[in-house]
Length: 146
Image (cartoon, rainbow, N blue to C red):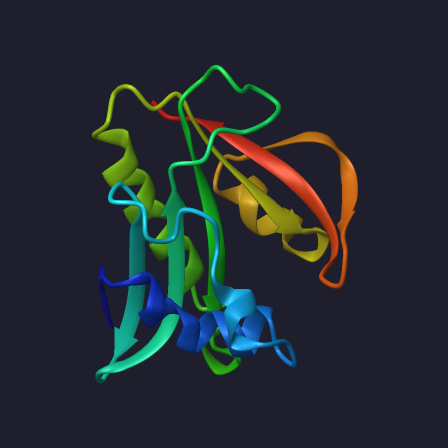
């Protein structure tokens, strides 16, 4: 398996069936997907994309004056879930973000059933659980970029 940079559009082929199944393909497009500072990674096995992650330069409403990146669209094909691929993608993007010393935090909104995944990666919950309409219950997590 290899992890490499990709385009936002390339991530859709995993984002859509895993995170937006039954919704229009356009629902996979995120604000700042095509920002020049956005980072998109994919995990490939035998030239097949099996996992994706995007890191977007979005400041968080919890700390709007601090420069931060938001992790979004973290998705692994069903047959490859729980094999450490998501952790590898997060660790790889954190390495890239860490190079930018002006970024203070990394944050994300995660589905509540992925709580342990983010806690094990050193993220801490911020605020209360909330509902994203037509998607489900989420929790915000943050991590210092150091």
